[in-house]
Length: 79
Length: 224
Image (tube, rainbow over the protein chains, first blue to last red):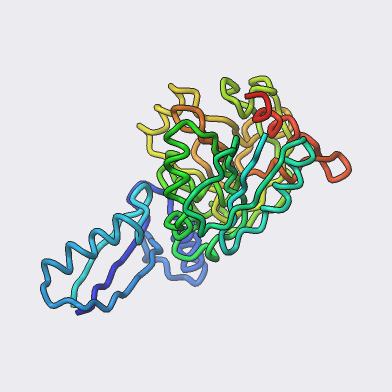
């Protein structure tokens, strides 16, 4: 099983990279973009078949290491 | 006075830090991160600057799990004095020994230059040689120095005099180089034995090199 973890800055925490990308898109005349958030994706190949177990393990990984929950949110997708 | 300086793979300020403290009369030891103990005679533990583990994942995120860090936590919770400079500050926030987090600079650039800082609180061992409102000139060199803390956390910092330094101009007026909340450059924990700052006092030890304002800062630790 694979776990896809998406990490992004929390809502309310200024995302300077997102802002810079938004600005660049604007200057390329893509004027229909409301907001840009830049995050990172971590893909884990898991030796686990039980979805519930996998979810709880990856949640622990996020809390302990993968995300800094002071400034970041994470989202886990199992495939 | 014995200063122990932590060294991770990618640390690069350990020798400057050693030189600075030795010039002030301390004996020093550089401690590789694989050590599971901290020398018993340590009076001050410094987490030096650099790019531990190449800043992979987040600055300080991997170093925080190095074998030595358990001993650092124990040392700090027993009242031992800890100073984190630059990457050391990032490591201490990641480890939960200091509040808040350090984000990418708002301008997205790595900033390397001298900057003025104003002393906000001096009721702690680190800055007691300086007066509140004093302005010092100290180099900064960082990509992720944008201090973030939520509103509740900021109130706590203010209520407990935990804000050490703010970025200003030479007159002490707020001038924010990286987007830090309230222009914060350094903080300490509630117990005032763990200190962290992004600027490098160990690089401001002689006028010939631009400033010796770091001397007064580091000297604070000598009169415990």
